Image 1 (tube, rainbow, N blue to C red):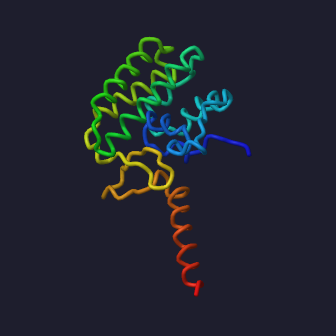
Image 2: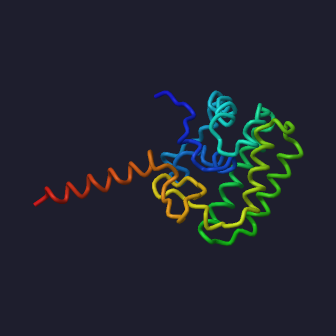
Image 3: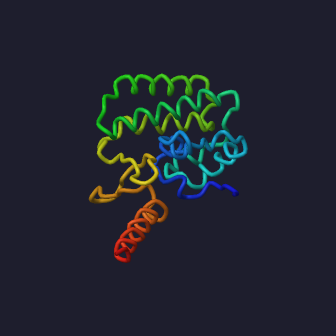
Length: 183
């Protein structure tokens, strides 16, 4: 199966969450997949960020990911996910916030400058930490991705209605029809 970076894969609403969401089925060890394990997908992520990321001011600057910063970048991704996932679930985030700030500082110190993906991701995470309204951050009810709910009434349940929302609704319909036909 071929893979491409599509708008669905950038449904987090900010670069930091889009990067955190590059691990598919994060909570399922048997099916978990890291899209950045494939160097071609990681390389293709940079132009996709410029085209599809919601944070246009940061995305247009992104030109590269420095290969020597791969480990630091992955640590930043994991720190972003750990902190914001716990924050969304209203769990204690003190240690996770410290880890995230250390990862941000490390990527800013050793990153490839303002045009580097790791720099833009670190800046995006900093913005998100200070953004008012943590109740707008949610976890997709279908795939577990983190996303910002920017709907007026804060009722969004899925990272992407066209993908996850459709899957959940189709599953509900299937089970409802099956119950109707079972004796």
